Amino acid sequence: MSKRNFNRLRTAIDRRNADWLESVEPDIHTALVDEIADGATLDEVEQFAIELSGERDRFARKLTSAARHLAATKGGD
Image (cartoon, rainbow, N blue to C red; front, side):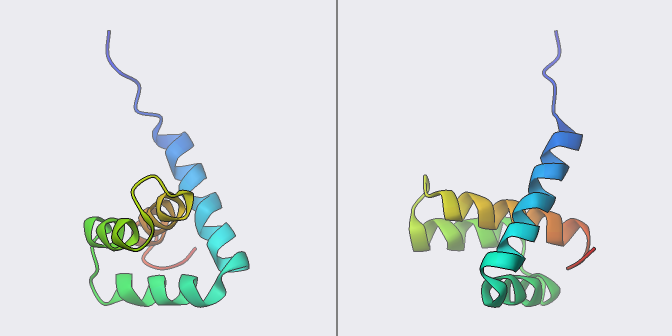
């Protein structure tokens, strides 16, 4: 049996987290958009978020999720 990857669900959650970040922390959202536009990779964003707030921190996970959405949409909808 193959493992389901939940691509549609992951995409929806990533978008929700990007929207959340934009509404709750607009300065951080703008900085994240700019970092991605300047070439930051998802791995770099994730590593930075973990270093700042810890691997299990919800904010680090949301930031990484939002970055995945923003990178997929090149910074916006």
